[in-house]
Length: 306
Image (cartoon, rainbow, N blue to C red; front, side, top):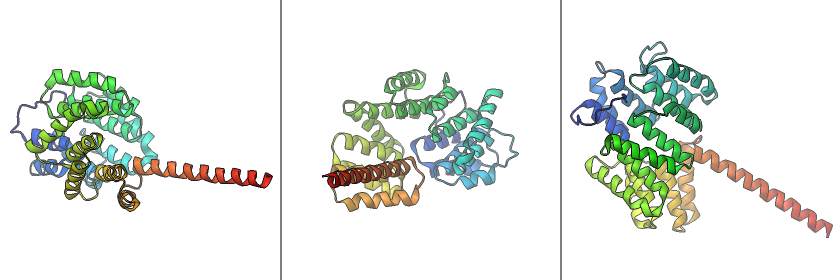
């Protein structure tokens, strides 16, 4: 996470923990850090705590990182608090942005943490302001994700080109290329597939990598292949958020019975009741019901008038 990342030292614990986090093998990242926890610096420990946050084990972050912690890891405690208490997001962002503005962020942890909270709150433009101008690959990769969420594929593509100039072979650079390729559509999707496939072979398949492959298969109408990798992803994590959503998309595209869609939707409601997908779907469903009721009432009034 430091400003001067060294991706060449493939034997270092830091490289391994960082790389496992990037590809979505969060327990792998944690297991690399745990033996070093007693002597590890903030940068190495940050990947363990980011991984705990990713697997919804934020209580460990709060337990390990006390309120009076004077290291940059305090930023990750604030991320956990934002996840757990959305009503405090504005207050917590004020603390994070004050710290980013006031102190030198040698490890880049404060910048990444602040941007994560902005993204969690849907404030992608503000996240980009925090990350703007950085030549740190993590900051640049997060900026690419923000730009894609804002439908600015053109700017994301330009930023990926800058990442390639810094380190074309870096894991984050390759992943960012895949994200942009997916966003560009069918002509570029196969390029993304090759990146995900290479990482699955080089490291190990994770739900993140497998879902990347699944999106390619779905986009190219290779539905049997999509189902195969999504089933493999479920074996890795039975309630993976992206996998459940992609299974719903697959069921819809292949005209499977409504029960197939509802089964995965119920799991999403159970495990991710406050997720963007579920809340957005509920809003649309409520609006649809309202419009249907209005249509029925209008139709009834017309019948009575006749």
